[in-house]
Length: 72
Image 1 (cartoon, rainbow, N blue to C red):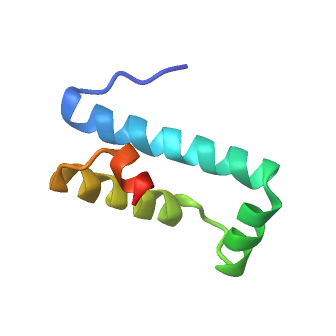
Image 2: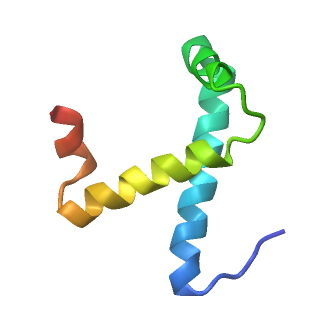
């Protein structure tokens, strides 16, 4: 099943879903990520996805690319 989203909310919703997907995948595959998330002692991963999304938007607002940030 899929959801039709308008442009304004669509990009934000898609970004959040991708972040959650990658986060869950990394938790399953990388014990370091699992242990990091476990340290926060929270059952809900939405807050982590929101923080990652917030950092992403701040980077875009400043005008950097993710590759530029990664190099620094």
